[in-house]
Image (cartoon, rainbow, N blue to C red; front, side, top):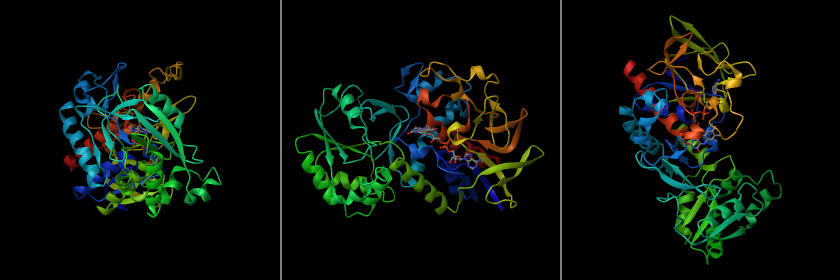
Length: 415
Ligand SMILES: Cc1cc2nc3c(=O)[nH]c(=O)nc-3n(C[C@H](O)[C@H](O)[C@H](O)COP(=O)(O)OP(=O)(O)OC[C@H]3O[C@@H](n4cnc5c(N)ncnc54)[C@H](O)[C@@H]3O)c2cc1C
């Protein structure tokens, strides 16, 4: 099977790279073995939230101080602002409405009741401009009876530090009784499915209105709109008080919806999405990747002019660590990491962990290196790249989005 471009990995990076290429008329395929980090999505995409233990106010400006090996520096700061404008527009065309600016972090309330700086926030969630104040003095946190994945006491604790008077109340409705009888069924996605059908919204909104009568703001878990993206907006219209949705324990309902919408957009543009297929190896010749072999396709090789490796970091097995080595399990590409295992981690768990910066080595065009030589048509994007600690910096989605759009541009320019 032949394509113009094949992308390995269907996470945020692979999907946005595929969409950009397909929008430019490329015949693309994405091969993805499974779920991605989007299933754990908090509701916001971070660009750069912290550098040298200092909170970042203006990510674009602060990027100047990053090391030359950081993916943002390697994309080139002259390109970053344009790509950061392009990213929300691409997401918007997929039906995902995000707001925020790359030169000014805003804040979101976390499930710990604290404020966190971020770049782009999905419109289900509430943006705040101040981190030290909460705009309301009386809040009610509402949870579904028997839903264990929403930790109301943490939220209450956090909000109390803003001098907010907080009540916690439960909502019981007949429609949730069947899933409530089995605690393993009482999960965010099953609750969301009940709302997707549409006939629950009015009764639920009425209950929320009754329970939030003596509060200024209502807080609920973000379990709305799995397949039906209008649910959260409809609820906000019907609930009389301002409504704040907070992430529950994964799987994330807004995250799964985002993944579905991105995949739909890619397929509507003519892209082919091979779900649940694992890329096992590739054939190389003349410093080029000629084809890839996947588990499901067996002997039917997949060929392309250019390939993109967007297989994620350790979490998605884009890179693997065993007691004696770090490696890319598909091609055995060069890894930017320490060969001495003792240097991989810091015993103090909250310190900057060196292994978080490890990833596949590339040249300046983001082409993968094998034995020190670039593979001419194999590009690398997203969290499989090294050079940053996304957890410490709050830069995960930014790196994934901006490197994938940059790599798509490199491919479009190269052909
Ligand atoms: C659990 C978790 C939650 C996060 N939440 C947030 C957040 O809320 N906000 C934020 O800003 N950042 C967050 N991040 C940071 C995150 O790195 C980025 O946001 C981004 O989603 C990563 O996208 P990616 O496409 O690079 O990798 P991934 O999302 O990891 O996707 C990689 C994909 O490659 C596939 N794959 C791997 N190997 C193969 C193979 N051999 N064959 C075929 N397919 C393969 C995997 O199945 C997966 O679908 C989170 C990270 C993690 C790990």
